Each structure stands twice: as structure tokens, then as C-alpha cells.
Length: 402
Image (tube, rainbow, N blue to C red):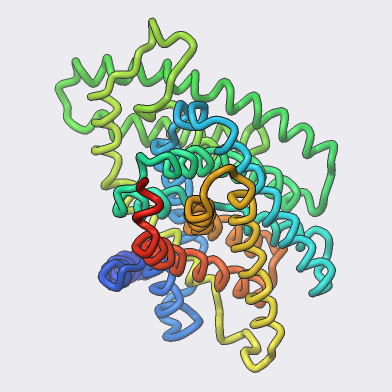
């Protein structure tokens, strides 16, 4: 591609992403939905102005890594531990049930292969911490007993989802399921998850020291992006997707991360806050590109919309996605309004689900129809739950706040 063409493409992507994100927020929807729609509008599905060329995909890859870095920054390990058995039960049930239901529906009802069905089920396991936290905070419900259970479960669910994503990624590049390789990947990932945050924490100490003595502005964003990219490369070197490196770095640099050696390596609140503040503009620049590229990759013109199959596929998986996330909460020893609220809070999919679907499409596991059906399910489970949560909280607030 000629440089001037790429510059024009990037210009269109950034502007349309911002415009559609603003429209989505004004319509009380997550900004990610607007960015996804922007890609659909300017891509092959509608106007055909831009193709998902390799140069845009490379920038989108950086966007994914930085996105998972941001998720890691917001992950609260202490909250996960303190929330106890209820959070763990909700998280594990909300992880296994949609995986099982999605796989079963795809394999037995729609005749997909074992591997395709596993990827479909994996796509349904994700929960968007960002959307859930924002809604609970807006309702002033995040510090309640139910809110603590939800937030703890969402943290564990996210970690399980990233590990599953790494395993499915290994399956996709290997051309099939190899349990020996899967075992090796799981071992590498576990080792990486244990050691990488510790290494990142030690490196952050040196970064903080040089930031205090540096006379040139911009040291934190430069070193932080370098650190994230290094851990992304390291993750790839051990057989995991690059985005796992960004997630591990984010966990280590979170204000809520702790070490067994916390006495000697205490968390500097001001430094952690500076990282979050100075990285935000970079993260907000790159991550919308990923969602626009997802929209660009979805060619809706190639789908046979008159066929009832895609609608049946989407509806069945939508039901599996909702039931799978809400089922675990129904077994808790809470009042029924609390159980329903906890279950609804686990339903939003958002960006992590789109990452699953995009890897499935990019690796050739999902054809255009399956990918489109999965994106439809993710969009509906991203847009609708915040509205339902607000409505349900409004009519049951007297019982939920007591």
C-alpha cells in the first residue's frame, strides 16, 4: 500500500470511530458498539471505502495488547480473594456453562465440527469487566454485598477467559486439537502468569526511579509501552497470544496488585495513578482501531440474510449465552432479587468476546456466516444487559439495598 493511501485509511478509521462512539454513548450504549458499527459502515458491508488491509491489522494488534493491558490495570486480585467462595462459584459456573451450552448447540444442533464448536463455546465465556463495573457504579451498587460478588467473579472470569483464549489460539495455529501441546501451553501460561507480574513489578521500580530523576518529559508512556510490548513478545515466545503479555503487565502495575514481598516492594499509589493517567491517551488512540477493524472484517453482503439459519444460530446462542451466565447465581444463598442482579451483571460480553470472535475468523475457523452470528450475539449481550440491569435495579432497589 502507498503511504498516502494508508494515511487516508487511518484518518477515516480514527474519525469514524470517534463519531460513532460518541453517538453510541449519547444513545446510552457502550462506545465499543459505535466503533464496531463504524467499521461496518465504512467497510465492505456498506460503503466499501476501506478494506481490512494488513497494515491496519498490525495497528489493531497493538490495540488488542493495550486493551488487555488496561483490563489488567483494572483487575483487583485482593477483591478476588476477599470475595470468597460465592465469587469463585459464580465465575466458574459462568465460565463452564456457556462453554458447554455453546459447544453443544453448535455441534449437535448446527452440525459444526468439534473444533468450530469449541471456539463458539469459548467465545460465549467472556464477561466485560468494564461494562459491568460502569453500570454498577452508575447505580451506586458496586460496594454492596452483591456488587462485591460480581466484581470478584468478573475478575476470575476474565483470567479464565484469557487462559482459554490462549489455549484456543494454540489450537488454531496448530491446525487442530493437540492435548500434549495444550498441556505445554497451559504450563507455560501458568509459569508466565506467576513470574511475569513479578518481573514487571521489579522493572516498574527502576522505571519509577528514572522517572524521578529524568529531565525529559514523557518517560512513563515511553517505558510503559515498551514494557507492554516486551511482555507481549515474551508471551508469544512461550506459546501464548501476545495480548496475554499486556494483561500480565497490567496486573503487575495495577494499584490493587500485591506481592508476597510487599514489605520491600510496596505499591506507590501516586506512581500507579500516573501510569494510568499517562497511558490513557495512548490506549484510547489504539484500541478503537481494533474494533473498527473487526467491523471492517465483517462483510454482511456475503451473508444469505434470507436464510433462517443465521437467525436461528444467533437466537440459540444468545439464549445459551444469557442462561450460561445467569445460572450460577441462581444457586447462591441470596434473595432472588440479588441472585437475578448478580446473574444479569455477568451477562455483558463486550470487547473480550469480540477478540475471541476475531481470532476465530482470522485463523479461518469461523466462516463469514458463523463470525457474523457470533458478532450479533456479542452485540446483543453488550447493548441489552446495561438497560435490563438499570430497569431491574429500579423496580427492586428497595429489596436490593436492604
